[in-house]
Length: 144
Image 1 (cartoon, rainbow, N blue to C red):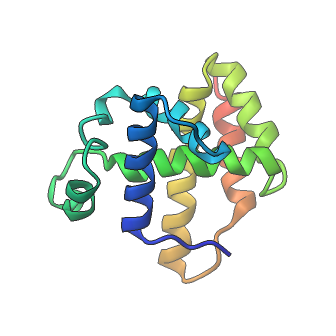
Image 2 (cartoon, one colour):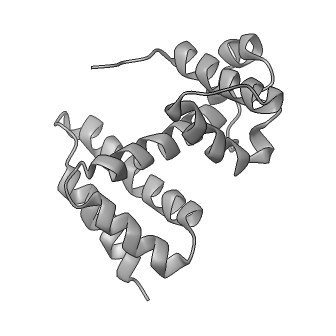
């Protein structure tokens, strides 16, 4: 299993941003990351220097989103949907996308569910509950 460090993730995303700006060729995962980076121009300054990104502690800035965590969650949800793991997440995100008329907004709503699932898992000392995650996304997809 691939388990990159925080520095690895930050260097990867900064590298993708650099390649995008240069029009350099990319691997498939880099292309996917570049699409999410393009959706978040507010993060481009954070992505401009890998060394600064690795050195920065986003926990010290309450109320500010960590762009690397945010973009990583977009990539995670994209990957989950591509392989439908946990089973049913693809359909739940598709339903949410249709309801919100935006894949980007659906991902942001799913991120709340993903974060909730991970927090609960850590709090309870149990493995993540994929079915609870899917149920949360489905509730958001059917909410009036």
